[in-house]
Image (cartoon, helix red, strand yellow):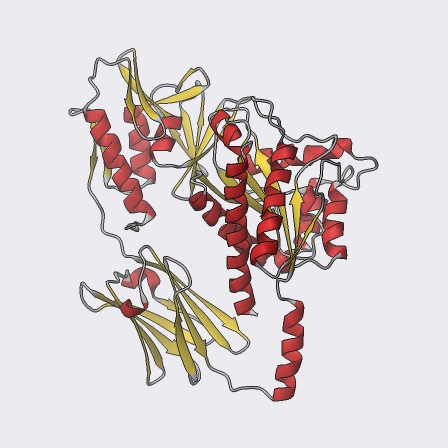
Length: 498
């Protein structure tokens, strides 16, 4: 049975594990490696100072990382914060805050090591106070905090009512949730729920809800009270995915049959019944090339063909491909093809690459200004295909103009981000890949698409382990199956919203 933890609880458990590992490593050890499932923890003692590999530290928490070989800088994405560490440098930057250690970082064989005591002090400042390094005992000490399992509430207004989205850090069943309306209030009782009454209390100047009043009735029951504007005609509990409680509240009367029929005809135009699959690169453009000689263009085509077969076999969705063999397609023609065929989704499939052979995992992008250094590097790599194009329309496109053009597509930005989030979650889980997150980036191949559109970096062809996987038909099939599940999940969610 799978247990569910908050990210902070997960952080605490892994720090405890790190603590136990440190306890069994003798202080005289110069480079003692302790085996774990998918990596090793290295402790290095230099001039009586103990260092820890920042890459191994990130692996302990399955945190996303990005390494730039040119500047010898690593970024660790931990708990929605970016921790930037540079070789031979005593400064650590966490988001916009800079912290100084007493000694420089140590660099050896493309690995950055940080002084354990100084680094732990900084981590303690950035993250909860329950993390401490005991110099006398030479170990990490953990005090588990108490957190609620009801984390966030969103309310979205729709044509015939509203959708209440309650995000949680554990799974609740329909038997755990009670709904009732009384005297203008909607009460949601959650058995086993723990709520922070201060953090979630809110007032709304407009909309169906005017106030949210959270209350911990007992150690077993949390109650969310919503003060409503208007009369509730119907309410329904929806449990569509883990760690989320959805409640549909209808507050408006039915409209006439004539208008309803017209709306139904309009809705059909927005049903996801046709998609375009775009295998990245092709022909004279090989894309990234793995250390074992694997071409990205071959991997992406293999995955795309398998995805096409699955969709045609298991769904009624019409599937079109920008290419179904090894030929070169200019970037602009890919989205033009999708627009011309009035596709409802555009999915571009790629394999990632990084100068550091240790970087691995999956990431999914939607169009927009780069929000991380890694996103910028990946976009530059994927956009380099324009060197193969004649009279490329992107050649004279400045960054500012590109961003303005991308913003013009904002009508599909929310849907693209939702699709990217679903794809990222399903692929990382189904294919057992490190989740490197959903990002924005200026990908030329997504520019101009008149439908929800994403670019999937399935795994790192520059990583020997993932390259070996990517070139196998079995792994390509797993990626294709995950993409199929993601598309169907998004289709269900999107069409339900319509």
